[in-house]
Image (cartoon, rainbow, N blue to C red):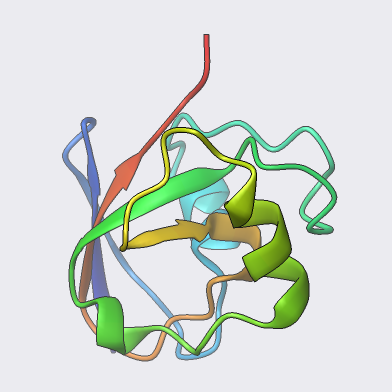
Length: 97
């Protein structure tokens, strides 16, 4: 069972393979914004994958288009609502104020 550590909260959770980061975060009370409800229609669930980037399914075209508009994006940015877990991860939640 994959393990995911969310920063800055430090919350660690066991994930089901194929579960999204957003669903896992919400199930474990991780503070993460999700204005569109997880439908890849915004970028508020932006996360930076600090460890285990290869342990997520590859992003699709819709997610890549959304990520392009983010000023704070990095080479390891993902949208939590679209990031399906395949293995262990360390994730930094990027909440917008």
